[in-house]
Each structure stands twice: as structure tokens, then as C-alpha cells.
Amino acid sequence: MPSFPAARGSINASPSDVGRRLTVRYRDGFAKPEREAAGVLDRWTGGLADGILQIRSRDGSELRIRAEDLVAAKVIEPEISAYELQWLAEQAWPPMESQSLNGWELRASQGATWRANSVRVAGRPPKSLADTLRKVERWYAKFDVTPKLQVPAPSGLDSELDELGWDVARTSRMMIASVSHLAATAGAARSRSDLDIEVRDSQNPEWIRLIASYRPEAAQEFDHIMDAPGPAAFVFCRNADGVLLGAGRGLALGDWASITNIDTLPQSRREGIATAILARLAQWAEEQNAKNWFLQVSADNTAARSFYEKHGFVKHHRYQYRSPTQSQPPGK
Image (cartoon, rainbow, N blue to C red; front, side):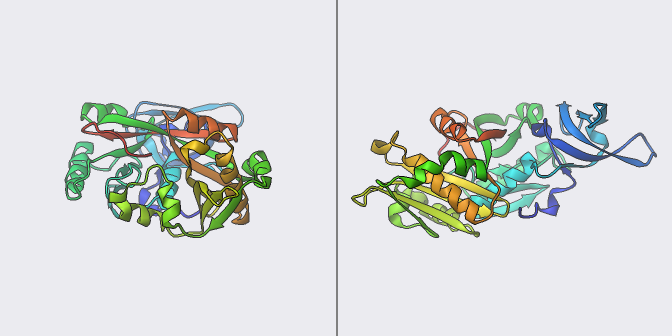
């Protein structure tokens, strides 16, 4: 897996990581030496600054730590934190412009998708949250893009963001699956004789016209995203007459691979086209020695969620987009 940027800081865990194994270093009272502990994060009540973590060790004992006493925290591999997975997703869907701000990453493109036009929030800024949000608004004003935050949920900042007027505009899910399981569950679709499935390392106009979220006025944004560095698979699924019925894209990121989209012609839905594309992507991921998949899907897209759950994807965490103004979401 690519290295998570050191600039993020040493607290690489949040309330959205409840249920995962952590290793922590913390202060145990004033002027006492730091201590270390490891175990499952059973609960995180309160916020990032004033919350209480409850950690259960292997022997069943429980430890309560104040968030303000944390010196370092990390999700134990092979699990991955919400912050790390959001960072990986950014590598697969990179913005045209970006700037770091107090541990957050400001991202702007042409406004076509929220992923490339929002702030990746990774922890509490070291300075005033209100001041940081004002800087966010000023930065996005330069690009004529509505400022949005992409925040794992729960974030430990929710009550403060509510008070500051940054409302939830959309909720999405990060879902994960093992590559081997995915290859096994969808593998039969690779043998369909009525379909011609081709994998290329780049897109073309025919492929991108099939992508539901594509907008011609934001062609530069989509070209930039689709040209993200790293081994890429652009899947073309055709019928016997050569008609393109479906398209998909995957990107390899070390031990992880990303499915950024699978789209089919409306008249070809419920005919197994998406499953055939998924099966070919799973085969490609195995060829890249990836161990796990991740993808992002809107919480209200029940059809897509059901499709991926059927093939073994499970929720890793929820995340929300927050904005000082409401607008209609153009993409995940």
C-alpha cells in the first residue's frame, strides 16, 4: 500500500474506526511517562478533542483514554483507517488543484464531481476550526466552486460543524472486499461467450461517453482523473455485434485496488453486464497482486449497493459531504 503522508500527523484514527484494532500511545496523567496499549476500539464517545476512547485488549480488559491525552494512534494492519482509505481514494480520483491546510487537503477541479471538489478532512485542525473553515471558503471562492467538506462519519467534529452552519448535503459509503473473494464470486461471468471484454490502459471517447457522471463542460476534469498515475484498467464490454454495452475502470494502488466506476447502457441493465465487467476487473486486480478492493457509492444508490453487497463488498465506513449551502450533488 502506498505510504500515508507523514504530514497527516500521528493521530491516524477517529470515531469512524470503532470496531478496528488500534495501537495507541497516550499520557497517563501530568508529568508521567507515556504508555502504550493495543486492542479493539469498542467506543469513542464525544469529539476528537474532548472524547473518551474505550479500548478492549486481548485478555478482555478495558481501557479508557481521554482523546486529549492521545499522543499517537494507528489502526493495526491489515486493517486500514477511514483517514487512510480516504487518502487512497484521492489517489484514484485526483483533483486538478490541491492545497494542504492544517492537515486537511483542499481539492478543486471543474465542479463536476464532489470527490474532486471537496476538502478531505483528516482530523481536527491544530488551530481554530472556525478560522480553518473561513480559509476553506476563501480558497474555493477562487475557483467558483461551492466549498464542501468530505468527512468520515462519525467524525468527532459533527456537533461543531452543525453549530458553525456546515450542514450535511450528502452521505456516501466506502465499501471494501477481498480481491480473491471477488474473483471467486464473479468468476463465472468471465466465461460468457456472448460478450467481448477487453481491457485497455487508457480511455477513449467511446468509453467515456458511457460514463453516467461525465459532463462535456468538465471534460478536462474527467481527463485529469482518468489519467491518474498507476496501473489502470479500462474495461470495454461489447456484444457480438461490437456494440459497447458497458464500461469500467480500476486503478492499482499497491495492496489495494480501486473501482471508480462501472456503467452500462440503460437498455442493457439486468443482463449481467456489470457482473461481467466486475469479474474482469477482479482478474486484472489479481494480475496486479492487489489484495483488496475499495469503492465509493452514494448511500441512496440502493441498486449499486445491493449489486456490490451481492458480490461480497461490505461497508468500511460512511462519509458525509458538508457545505455551508445546499446544492444538488453531481457525483459521489
